[in-house]
Length: 326
Length: 283
Image (tube, rainbow over all chains, first blue to last red):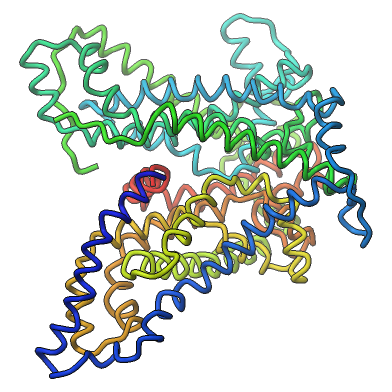
């Protein structure tokens, strides 16, 4: 955010100079004010003509819903009937006091743990593949491809993969371990399996982001380090790690907010059964199956607040500074 | 990806071997579930009951399951709907994003900071959290269960593309605008004749990212287009769960049908896709 506003501030004076330069240039050519800029009201209106559509869409589909949602969260509205009653903080109280509503938060921890595994794997492969290796592009492609696959297809692929006596069981039995295991049978194993799917799916994105960051580090730095006799480990610690810090911090925040907002994979694979219900699944069910729009809105407001809080903390901890290596 | 790779340090062969081993294991982990589904899609239902998951199909050219999946799964309609939504939401996103970036980057106006802030703050609100209320907005426009609901939502809530356009716009010299202005071009002509054509690389990036996102999205069509004839490839595939139940050979064929276009696009546009995603996510 600071990056953007400072950018605007930086450009400010230059644009001002531009505005005052233009009439003079026009005068040189045509001996008067430039033709299309004669009318001042039109000139002031011009940017708004371009922004009208985008702003209208932005407000209609982002800000109006956020505003409405906060309002609904204080009502007992069912989403359909014309009458709704203000119930104050009742909905919020329910979410924090009814354990079955609050429990879904704990499912997020599986995905949170998974996303750290995912970041670690991605970091390892990004480091390894930024050096010269045979089949580098093939490995890159294979690691990234899962990220591009349709979520429903992935859900089915893994539903089949985890079946009793299915692929995973067969692979496990190669290594001598006992045959059938109901991977999606108990809450703990189901959540671990689903979190594993999300590692499979999203590692590629992290990998590509890290790879881009590693490769934007100038090659001379490595050469210099090697001349100084730095080991691989030292190179990683002192060149790569600081170079990718901004991307790493972005990944962490995406990991945290992403693990709170998991929906697709558990919805497709288990429908939220066997303790795999996540916060978003619960909210969708409350709103669209049980017609508890008020309660669902309160849940969504809580989720939104948590994500905003995490973003804010991250921005405090890791300011948007440019790490200058050269 | 044009930057040359840093030179390889001389190191013991065992280290290199371990690196290759880890890469091969990772590729197996990626490929195994996909290959198994491909194999399954080529099996007959009898083979399914008699053989294990990892066995090879008897006839590699058995495409019966694909025919069943394509016809009974209404995949043609699904591809049609997805194509329709893709066409409109991508062109909309490109126009909206470039207009916004042009207005923000090339003009000084009152409340500019507020407008920039509005776009910025919106990035912090994950769309998934506001769907309960967004649904009411869409419903009040009478757009529920029409293809315009997802199109408008994809167009209206995409801030990443605005960023990508903004970044590119900064690289286009202002002197070009000024020269055109001296020749009597108005702001819209400048946008259409100069800025928009110069934004081509950014447009390619946005088209790729948006295309993949829209093609794969499940959440929005699932919530906003429940009618069967409005199924997109995601929701149509999701419906396989019902009629095909435990017929994994058909479900697998459906999944492969959905994955194939992605694979084709990926193989042809690999490089642009990596760049696009790196640019999109880091803004």
